[in-house]
Image 1: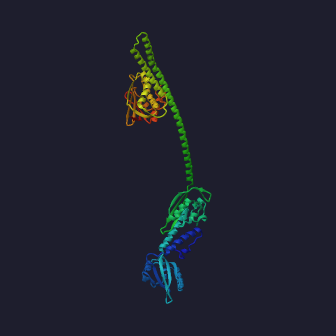
Image 2 (image 1 turned 180 degrees about the horizontal axis):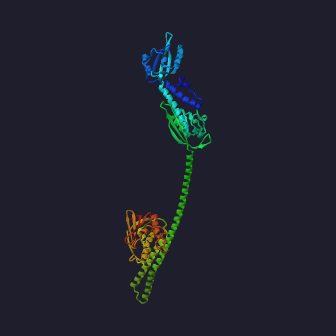
Image 3 (image 1 turned 135 degrees about the vertical axis):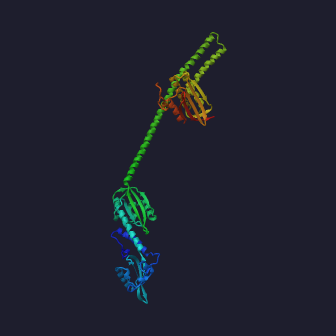
Length: 535
């Protein structure tokens, strides 16, 4: 049953009870003083506490008709304790004093209803006639108070068993309760924190945390924030997950919960993982730098090898050219000697003289052209330049001529004019020489009758297409996939397996083009595609 001395008498043995009592005090009087929308109860009694008038609102609330109560003693509606108190107050009202108090009235069914009573004396010609009273039903207010008490008790129970630290704040931000887990986590007891404003707590004085707490108290903005490393009263350094919640009861009372979760282990694990990730990133960077350095060194060695192969190829070509030169040199020598014999025998006329001179000059001019082409190829490109594709192909043909002529091969050329590209002409010519020479070697190994090499050059939509083919029988499928690999060769002689690999590097890297192999019915075809233009 509700205590009659009034809620203003609530007190506690410690600060927490005192503050909780203050919260109830602040809200209940407001509820009591409110006037309900419906009409309030009204009653008058005589000097002997007999009812002389009762309004319909009060009589019906108590379960009676008005006339049923008129003439009855107030004792019928009260418990004896309250009736004695009313009698005492009536004695005071004879002296003209009004009073206000809380009491319960019994209904016709034996239930009780709590009222706030405002009583005043009735006089006529300075004679005390009795008392008039206004009754305000406090049933809902009592339910609200019970709800407040029940809610506070519930949260105290929840706080006690919650494994995380918990602070309960009043609507003004005053700490009214903490749980044992909070004390274990921070080392702060009820004496340290109860009754203090939350913004005065030392470990929450950081500006970022103050901002969160002020927003929670002023604007009811809930938050969830991970803290930096905090030093606690018990000497522990912890990382916290700090969450703030605004709670509002049906009766309008607001309070706040702060929950403190210890995330130190996870945070330290995250920091260890972060450090490991940073170490891994650093190791990755070091490995990348090491790999790039090794790749650069490998490329340099590879280009050195390719360059050595180019020199070796030129030396071999030079040897073949020297062998090829013997026949035209011998022919020129014979022509000169025959001119001397003709002269000695008087057979050297003008026509015969010029015929033999032209023949000798022609053979020597071919030797000179071959030598000039070889000298051109043996030199280095000083940089990129625009060059004629047909001329580059013809230079390759001139260089390889001793080879295919020694093998009795026939060369078929179908070359469009005025096609140009930008790049390294000597490297390009060397790449073509490698592919043509590959066909000539296949003729010799397989002893092909009527060997044929054909080279086609065409232009289509800014693409230069060069096709180099032969009738040497082609390359088996399992081998064809590897012909552009470095050091791969099927030959048993001293071949290094570099030629086609070098050709592919030149076409793909220096000219951003492509080179593909295709087996035909009679042999092989290499298809080269690079960017270019036609004038």
